Image (tube, rainbow, N blue to C red; front, side):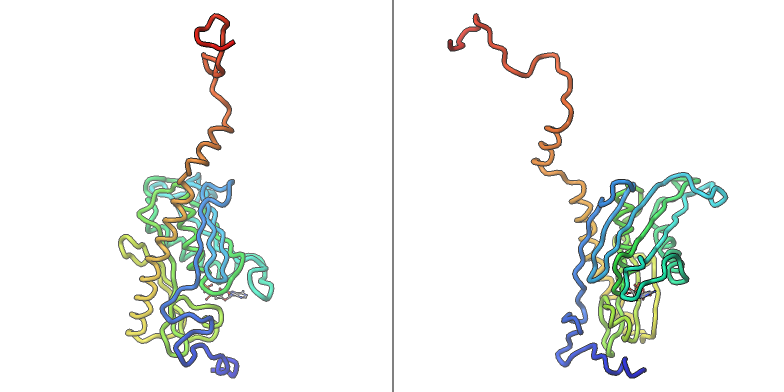
Length: 274
Ligand code: ADP
């Protein structure tokens, strides 16, 4: 362990973390669906200091054509970090890390989307990290999942990403940037909440079997909370209040009608005051 790592105190004497959270607590998470009008589906996630936008296109004809699968759709994912997303400017464009994350996220979604219903097509998923503060792959997969649902692509269930790890000898949920840098381990995973299927599991560092079980228990518990937020974002996107419905009706061009809508009074009409 280097000098800097020794100086960073990640857990204080009453068991709190450097951002005030207890080991089992998540950072605040906000999810919004349908934020981009040009994409078939989209979502925006704020998770602690992470800000991630996801856009989905398809299923549409797969390009280049030699990639097409005659019996199923492809899931092509691109995870990208904006140059301004981290404190030092990140070199733009794909690198080894973003290629790896794109690949594991494609594999995760390939196991939930009903690919066989759309032969020769591609579901294209773009994830743009606008601000990064550890846990971006989990935030990206959580956003992408809502965007895929928003695009109406049929899938078994939403997918939720969440990470846990070990910090100052304590297993903790959802590591922040300092914890990720100076902690002992980080285990990002993604789960299909309805079936409990784990569709992504990675580990950076070392954990004992018992610590691993605790980390997974934390992540699976948090995934249920995030799942509710995802569903809530989709509900908000598609529920229309009575006021919004009336406002839309009022601005829509009126249907041609046979009868005039205004009242026509004739002099000889009974009961009409002079
Ligand atoms: P994740 O974001 O999924 O936790 P990593 O563990 O690889 O993925 O990265 C942890 C954090 O390190 C990122 O969220 C980001 O804040 C930071 N980071 C990653 N790549 C870079 C980079 N090229 N330049 C600066 N910071 C980076």
